[in-house]
Length: 227
Image (cartoon, rainbow, N blue to C red):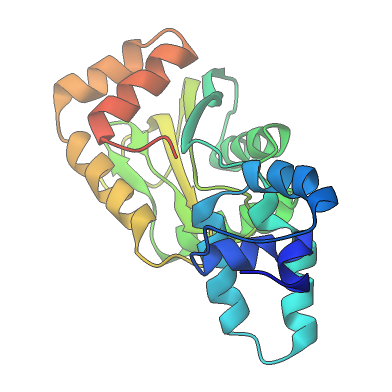
């Protein structure tokens, strides 16, 4: 593509979302464009394009571009900074807030309240306590900057309204961005639920001592892509 639009940095996410892999622009613009492209996530560009195509007004598209969500570097689904293995949370509310705070500290949300509301909305439909001492709260929301999994291991078991009435020792939270072309969060959730039926899997999670080991183990067991 050549022309003035190709030289406009804010338009790059839409162009890449359309699948363009060659653009022509003034030499003076090349360094800025290369830097911007290096920070783009192809997946986020496609999502942004999908949202833009659903807009009815030019101002709606401009607002999407101003948010700059596609210009954030791609982030792994699971990272050590979202693995907390010694939580002092004493109830469900404190545990949810601790995980949401971890998202904020990790730069994965700029709106803690909206993320927490999305999690509680899902919880209101049915408890995400899966039994065996594990809970897997999950949601889809654009309050986060990237699809994410977080782990919270509790020092004191808490009530979660689990199907077997057993208190929860570990929480594995799954949060995915809107919109999604597929039910990715439910796919990960279903795979996790099946794995938790294995006593060996549960026991290994409870004995893990550090965030790196937990991250590597879940990536392997859930067969998830880090991006």
